[in-house]
Image 1 (cartoon, rainbow, N blue to C red):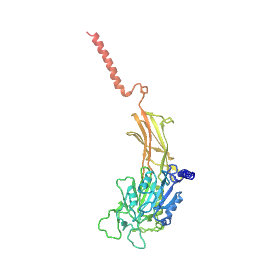
Image 2 (image 1 turned 135 degrees about the horizontal axis):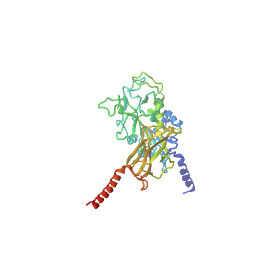
Image 3 (image 1 turned 180 degrees about the horizontal axis):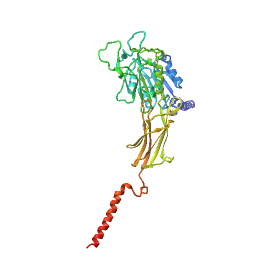
Image 4 (image 1 turned 135 degrees about the vertical axis):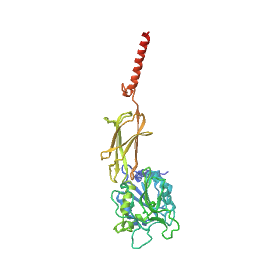
Length: 437
């Protein structure tokens, strides 16, 4: 190998840590995003969405989905921390990327946004299916709603839907109410009932159905009513987040800027809710909201400050932990009243709800159960829209030593009485038997 080749390899390895801004619990939203497109024209027609990401500090790298030079990892290290797929028609990704590589990317804790439409390829449908979402199998089907459509100058086929059936979660969509309906035109999907991690964030109305709008219905549609999901999210067990939409136009400048009026509603909004909806939703997907971390887990006997190597049964102890939420800029104290700790050995012997001081510190105190063995302090915190906190700390519990018991145990008084009464009875019986003729 020449000196020039050695220098190239050395520089490549040196710059990998700089290119791979891997997921960090300290700054979870300072990340690099790969955007794969069907056509570079989408970069300008969907620029408002991309600009909102760029303004929040994301480094977007745009490439064609079939570019033979694209790669998401090098030398075993991922070059990107999030992936946006707005390439519904791609039959095969370029480079070394395939459906398995995309799923491995998510399994490694990275985030994913998938936008599909009626032209969705088998590749995109496979990724969605593996994520817990099933698009309508009819390639000509669109979501049709004759009651909840968006009023326009032309009557149309009622495939342009104005939906305002949002998920009820401030963590996912923010605490500011979305006033205007969201414009949607595309394909619907259903959630895999065996996947408890997938969640509808934008649903169709009860009057909607999925079918080919250009042909008459000859059989009942496979997807109907509120079971149709327009936009869904998944938070994996490793806290990676996925957004799946059945509409590419949902992200477009045209829908962002368009006025909207829902059929049957006299109110006309000057601007649709698409921009606010996708901005808030993308904050959640990219961990700018709803991302928790726990630090400074402490436990000790009441009245002491140091953490012991073990506890004794019936000791009084105090447990505390600090929990913070990422705001997109800094870590702020997380305030909730439903954080619980378990003192666990095979099953929870103690279950306590933690009190909080409003500054991120959670604490409680309890008595060690009268059972010895190897216990764990466990927190399994799962709340809609928030990353899962799973904390575990092992601690042994010993019984009393022989010289630590009370001299006389009140519970044993009946046994004391029985022993002394037996001795007294034996003495009296002996005296009577020996000295009585």
